[in-house]
Image (cartoon, rainbow, N blue to C red; front, side, top):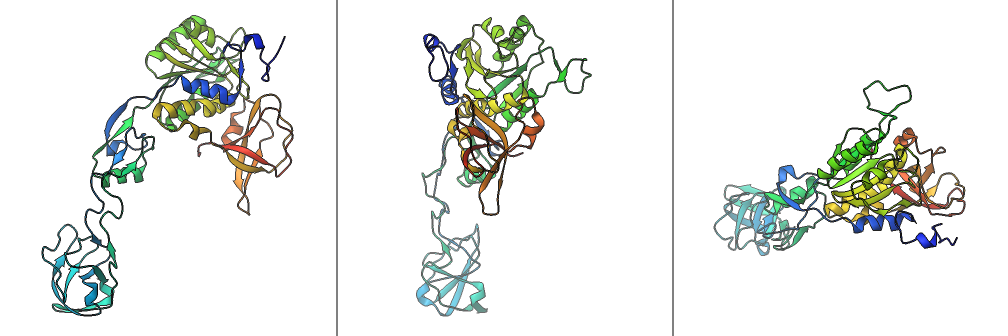
Length: 417
């Protein structure tokens, strides 16, 4: 039997259900099936953390006229230094209607419009006034003046689609005069776990049960990535029950995430249940550790991502695959979710096996300002406590040789705790 470089049977290489795909290949196949969602208008006060769908364009210059950067006196720089006659005042929101003629000055406040004829502002600490006369120090042309359009000009693109809107971005949209922005709809993520061994937190588990944990972590991560997640009720190991719950989840979501039942054992029923719904399998298994049983497909009701039941496996593969899927739905750069940094190993690592390996790790900055990564000793895929202490994943390519302490490796930073 002939095998390709990933260990696939060459005669089956075209069948995604039977191929062992590389991580990048699997992610590309998933993203090819994903479309950006529609947009909706939102008032600025409701748009925090939403993703911009259409550009924010300036309707006018900002500032729309030259303004003073200081409290002081607007003057003609050619008249300085000297004693000038104060002929009026320009305040923020209430300008001076006359003209600054030779030998005159206008009292001015920070942010107020520069009067016609003036080309400099002398700050009040450098002026001495008695009645309507003021003695001012020397001032250069345009000193203490913010020019019209200093911040931005009319028709300038201020925010581009894909920007996640924080307070600064919303402030910029407001100063551009917008009361609302167009944002991409939140991806609706239905999360369904299955398994007779699962009990809900807060209940009394049976003698051979464990608490469901992966769905809580996945829902929180999906929300932090801009989605609107819904945890569905845990289903038992029954194809029909899983199929009915999955069908309901698909009808109310943009993507269904199935947790557990992803392998090939007799109790792994997630994929057979979706086959009953007409699943077209696009990714059958992935050459990744942890998470080889991860799969992805398209059912008549929508997209489906199948994740392993072990919590660490599910969360690692959510970082590798679900986040870029959500980014594409939101109109963000999907590559942003898997941009690696370089760090030095704080401890040596052995050679890697045939699957791309993502090790839970802690990355810190040493006294010289270098990023230092230390993988945890135990990488068992069921250990969520280790994941909670990690802030990064070390990526080891398939077949990577042993790495000595101090060697450079790629790290994928996790979202801040």
